[in-house]
Length: 323
Image 1 (tube, rainbow, N blue to C red):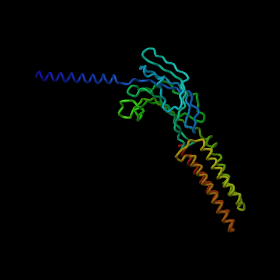
Image 2 (cartoon, rainbow, N blue to C red):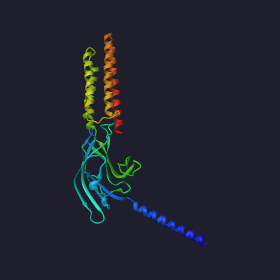
Image 3 (cartoon, helix red, strand yellow):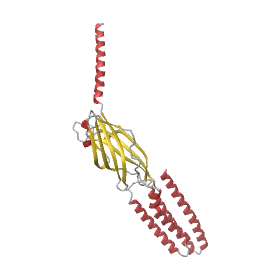
Image 4 (cartoon, helix red, strand yellow):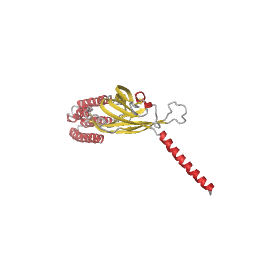
């Protein structure tokens, strides 16, 4: 009986010791938190061709572990350049408070499938280049506004702004000795700003030449059948005008492997100008046979049907781009 009691007590004490030790170890290994906040004062120089934009902001961090040293270890992964115009640090007491003014040229990817009726997401994130998630985790400071409501983006509207924290994985050990698996994870602080383009003015600026070229080609149906040379001359000239307009629009956009709204509208216009030329060829054939009245009726039918289908297709694809 005494032996059983002794074994029972030893087991209880062992369980209590293991539980306490595990809990204490977990507390010792808990990562330090870095309370992080942001206030954006300006977003400008949105460059579609170079896939970049510039953001000016205030960034502040509060943490207890002085080894973090964000003045030296601040990492902004998507930044092309980072310039710090001002910084102040208060390390009195048991907490470090760091405030800095940054201007960053950010690289990002643009979605141009529906250009110019596109919606873009601007991304900004912060990491510490020396301490991974086992040592450091970010906590968002949600007090107050995160951007100046007085600043405006020319030609854009700010839709939403989301601030989150998370983990970013890198499939590499960064050359550190002793790592057996090429996988490291760092805590990050992420900002996503969704912006919408004020597109109608830009749309007419970029596509007015294309529509005028189509209308010039369309005027062929109102030229008498005796002047077929004028008809074909207008059609061919309009064809080259649409191609030139497309090259001008494409020069302002980054290269894309997808079929965009710009490609669709120009493709439709080129196809319908080609149909006008085919219609003129058939009209000329009828005139050569002496069937002038039949040629005139054919012109009227083609004029109505081609214009109607062209307008419907344009309205349909523009409507889809706005959704």
